[in-house]
Each structure stands twice: as structure tokens, then as C-alpha cells.
Amino acid sequence: MAASVGLSMVIISISKFLLLICGLAALLFARRAPDAGKPLTGLFTPIAVLIAICVFALSLLWTVAPQADALGSVAKYGKLLVIVLMMVLLRDRREAMYGLTSFAAAQLFLVASSWMLLARWPVPWATSNMALTEYAVFSSYLDEGIISAVFAAICWHLRSLVPGRFGRPLAIFIALIALVDVFFVLSGRSGHVVGIALLSIAIMWELPKKYRGVVVLLPFLLALALFFSSSKVRERLTQVRTDVNSYSTQVDATSSSGIRLSLWRRAIQVMSQHPVAGAGVGSWSTEYNRLERAQNPAHIDINGNGNPHQEYLLWGAQLGIPGVLLLGFLMSSVLKDTQGMGRPYARATQSTLLALAVACLFNSSIYDAQIGDFFCVLIGLLLALGLRSADIQKAAAPQQKYAT
Image (cartoon, rainbow, N blue to C red):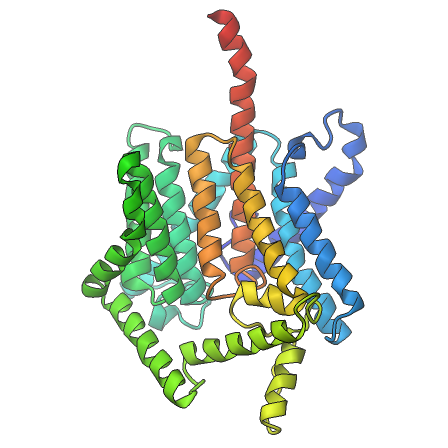
């Protein structure tokens, strides 16, 4: 499962099915294990995940969406269970390291494939429609930019775990080529923003504490530097300004940014009409079509898989203001569970969480396939690795004290 994320949807789907089978087997035989449930004891993330899924399932009682759309959306949010499954099935640090190694190998393959596309080398496994024009291998340049930015952060923060004399420099080099791929090869604006955020917080953590306040200026300084050094960043940022100006003066929703602004406006309208409980799970497309038809009777309905390209507003439209708070609770629970980890593991997990929080501002990064699977698998993997490593340190502490 760790090796599948970022690759083709077929591989991800097969891996999720196998993971589900393993999870069901672990549940069936849990009673025989003397330490059943111990890996999740005292953690907040599993509780938050179960609450979120239960609330979405409960909203089936009042949803305005067709049953098929509602049940499909519940299934989409079911991917959050992957976080818990990874934490349960990775029983010790050794297994978690196997998972991390598999993840890193697959992501390195993804980054190398993107560079090969740029060099016009044959890449027969590239199935993306954007492979030859935007150098995205399996998905869109939007998803791949975010994924590569997160991979660069993982390589940097966990560089000390790479074995061998040249392991640490190798991890830093891979992080560098992944970041260059994000900023100078791929065109995804979300990936650019996530990359700037992760680079800013990484620099902040390396600075002495008295200088960490500079992190407020770092994103702007990095964005300015990239604006003048990267044609990809410059073109995409300029396009955002043009699209927003066009939308504000002519309400032109045909551009990428214009479409997002229009969707966000409708999502806020849905929240304002259903502030307490929302319109129910899977209701976004139904509510959007209703609002559009009221303004334009000739509106062509979008299908039930649509979303407003903003995770916070999507939860708000479906569950009202409590839905936005629920998403915040889910993210804060992950952050809380990183507090007992060692520094490298905590920073890697917190960087991934930051990337998710930023990506959700511009996309439905949990609801969507591929990118949602990527974040769920990686968060579960890093939590398992950090917590199992912390368990080893706690177990060794009494022995060290006795030896002393």
C-alpha cells in the first residue's frame, strides 16, 4: 500500500482492497492477541477518524442528495480508515521502516519518470493525459506537484534514517531534485504553494529559536525568488492574477481560477442556507445544480462526483459549520499524536499535515482519489513509524537508567 500511492489508480485500488482484507483479518483474529488494540491506546487520530466517518454516515438521514451519490461520498471518506489500518497493521518499527522504504522507492520512481518525460525519453508506463505536455506520469500535474513536494520534505526530515556512508547526502540530493521538479518542471500551482510552505517550515526548524519569527516572511521571500527564477511559477502566478481580475470584473468562470471562485461562492451559499447540519453527505452536486438552475434555467447539471475544489468548504456544505470544525479536529488530532515522537518523525508527519492543510485550501484533497489516498497512507505510515520508534525509546529508557 505504501508503494502504491502516487502511482496509477489501478494499483492503488488493488492495494486498498488487499489492505482491507488484511484489516478484516486483523479484526477477526484480534481476540487471540494478548495486546489487541494496544497500538491505538491513548491516541487521538483513530477517534477523530471514526467520529468523522460516523458523522458522514449519520448525515444520510437528512441528505438532499440521491442515495447513490450519498453512499458514494461516504465510501470516498472511508479512505480515512486507511490511516487507522496502517497504524494497526504496522506492528513495530521494522515493519514501518519497510513501509517507508517502499514508499520512498515508488516516489523516487515517480520523480525520475517526470524528469525522463522532460528529457523526451520513452516512458511507456506514463498513463496520464498530461504526460507529454506537463510531465505528469500517472495523474495530473496538480496532484503530482503536491506529492513530489511532500516527498522532498520526507527525504529532508528523515535523511538520518538512510543507511550507508552516503545515505544522508543521497537523501538530501533526492529532496533537491524533487523540489526542482515541483518548481521548474511541473505546472501545478497547488504544488508550488505546498512546496513553498514546506520549504519555509523546514528552514524555520533549522534556524535558532530567536530567529524563527522570520518564518512569517519566508513564504513571501521564497515566492518572490521563484517568481523571478522559475518560468513555471511566474506563468502560473501571472495567470492567477489575470483570472481573478477577469472574474471580479466580468464574473468570468471559464478560467481555472474563475471556476474555483464560482464554486467557492456556491459552497458558501450552501453553508449559509444549512449552517447547523449542512445539506448532508454527497449533497454538493445537488445543491450546486439547484443554485445554478435558479439563476440560469439552461444550466447543465454536474454529476454527483463534483466538488468545490476546497475541502473545508466541501465539509461545510455537507455538514454545516460543525463540518469545518470536524475537519479541524481531525487535523489537530494528528498534530497532537506527533507530540510524543522523536524530532525527525514528528517534523516529517507535521510537514505532511501542513501540506494537507494547504492543499485543502485549493482542492478537495481528502475527497479526491489518488491525492486523498496518498495523504491517508502517508499520515498513517508516519504515525506508525514515529510511535513505534517512540515505544522503543521508552522501553530502552528503564534499562539505560538501571545500567547507569
